[in-house]
Image (cartoon, rainbow, N blue to C red; front, side, top):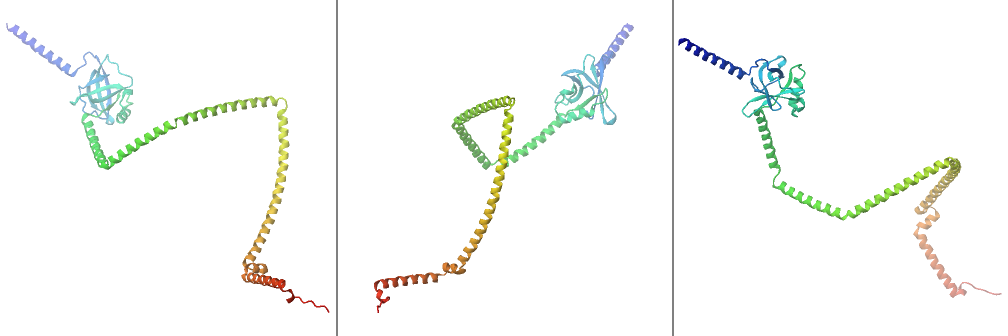
Length: 334
């Protein structure tokens, strides 16, 4: 009886020890029989990541974080256990990020081409790359940091809204409504103008088509002329044309010589005319200033008055001679 009790007690103790061992191994997720592969990634900072956090590949849990260790050069190495059946993506990169709103973290293994378009993340991956078998890693900002940034953005938005409220008063609203009305009137005017000048656009289009047709005809004529020139160059017509052009050039040179001589004569005549005009101007100046007899005659009013009085007296004398000639003429015969 006593042996039976000892056997039961021993069996119960052994079962408890095995259960505790299995639970411990299950909690620590110990790799029994080396059914898992080891992966190491390095980071500058791992945030709130802890040992035992999940490792996710393409949204599927593929292992756990086994250890987090400080390394040389200010790096932090994160060792991960992965199932041997899991195949890593090409150019793998490890991202540490929050998996829930309760502060739980996870390690996400993703291709480098699938990284988010964030300059900070790209810089962390580029800095941690090149470590041999160690994968490059980056830490995404947590909810607290995002909340702080969101609060800062909200404050900035509030400041901007306040400034907009200060700048956009009732007067600005009235000006904006006036601008909208002006724009509507402008749109109506443009629409009316387009409808009015639609026929002009059609006319312009037809004119352009006619011009293009004329250009095509001109090109055809030029092509015909070129063919004629090619055909005439073979029978000596081009030589005759060049001879005629040379003769015309010689005649043109002779004409230019004659024109040059005529221009020189014209220049001489112009100089003489200038001299004549200069002398005439000096004579007119003398006449206008009263110098000389003719100038005094033209500019002295007393001479005009005396001459007019003399003519009056001569008219009176002629009249008296006609009426009484015996007074002035006496004829005696001896």
